[in-house]
Amino acid sequence: MSGTEPHGSAVVDAGVVIGHLDMSDAHHRAATAALAQVAGTAARLLLPATAYAEVLVHPFRAGAAEAAQVDAVLAAIPIEVAALERSTARRAAELRAVHRSLRLPDACVIATAVEIGAVLLCTTDRGWPGRLVESLAPALQVLTVDRSLT
Image 1: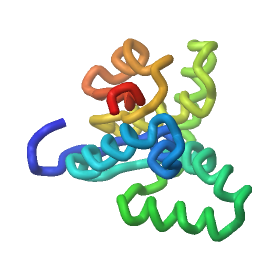
Image 2: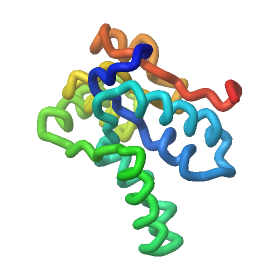
Image 3: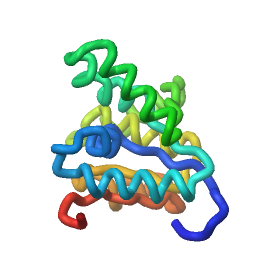
């Protein structure tokens, strides 16, 4: 993505947000850089509700205050939480049924990006993006956050 005018929506997966939040995470530097880039170029930055739940698991183990801090960070970026609509859930189930190695949380992220017509999907997962996403939405660009690029 380039240019100075924000355009289109971008969807991020839980791994990117978790990497950004956790300074000891292998993806921390790359995830933080990717979020800054994407937040500066996308009109909207969305985190699927299922990925939001995944992001909150560890903070809730530490306490409600930690989870509240996560919400404050997401609001500051800003990242919106995208609801899991029926059509999105249906597409995710179809993806999971056809691509047996694709985990349901990942299917929900991909389905969200496809259903909202996102221009960018940002992920730390190197296992599924490439050809699968291209076959579903050829205009959807995948940015894979790679810890080795930091």
